[in-house]
Length: 163
Length: 163
Image (cartoon, rainbow over all chains, first blue to last red; front, side):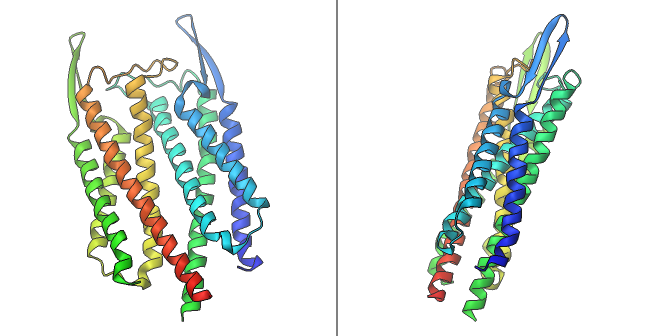
C-alpha cells in the first residue's frame, strides 16, 4: 500500500486518538454534588459500573491507536490490524451504547421502574458525561471510517489484481 | 468464491437468523407484574426505550439476514454486503450493550442515583430479558464471525492472486 493511501487512515487514527483521550479525560473528571433533604448526594463516574467500563474501553482504544501510530505499516500485518480495528470498533460501540442507555435514564428517569431522573440535581455531572459521550461517538465514527476505508482498499486491490 | 467457501457463512447466517428472531420474540413476550404497597406494578419491555431499541434492532437484523439467505451470492455484491454486515454488527452490539447496562441497574440498582433494583419484584420479566440478551449475544457473535471469515477470505484471495 502506498504512502498516499495511508494518509486518510493516519488522519482518522489521529482523530480517534484525540477523541478517545478526550472522552476518557472528560468522563474521569465528571463530578457534581447536590444536597437533597439534608442528604449530601455526590455524583461521580466511578459510582456507575457502565461509566467505569466506558473509561476503560476508551483508554484501551487510545492506547491501541497510539501504538499503531508508531507501528511500521507493513501490509503483512494488514489482516491482523483489520481484525484488531474491528474489535476496537465493537468495544467502543458497546461502551457508548451502554452509557447512552444509562444517560437516558439519568435524564428522563423510568417511572415504571421507579427510577427518578438525576440530571436536574447534578447538571454539571450530566454535562460532563454528555461531553464524554460526544467525544466517544467521534472516536467510534473514526474507527467505522477506518474500517470502511480498509475494506474498500482491500476490495479494490483484489478487483484490480484479479482483472 | 466457490460454494464450499460459502457454507460457513450460510451456517452463521442461519444461526444469526434463529438468534435474532428468538431475541425479538423473547423480549416482546417479556412481562411480569407485582403488587407493592397496594400499587400494581407492571413490567413490560415497551416501558423502557432501551428494550424497544433492542427489539427494533434485532428485528432489522433478522429481516436483513433473511433477505441475504435468498439473495444470489454474487461476488460483485461482496463489497456492499461486507459493509452492510459491519453496520448490522454495530447495531446489534449497541442494542445488546444498552440492554446490558439497563439490566445491570435492574439487577443491582444504583444506590448513588437512588435507583432500586427491580428484579426481585419482577423475576419473570428479568429472566425473559436475560434470555433475550443471551440470544442477542449469539447473533452478535455470529455476525462477528461472519465478518472475520469474510475479511479472512478477501485477504487470502488478495494474497494468493498477488503472489
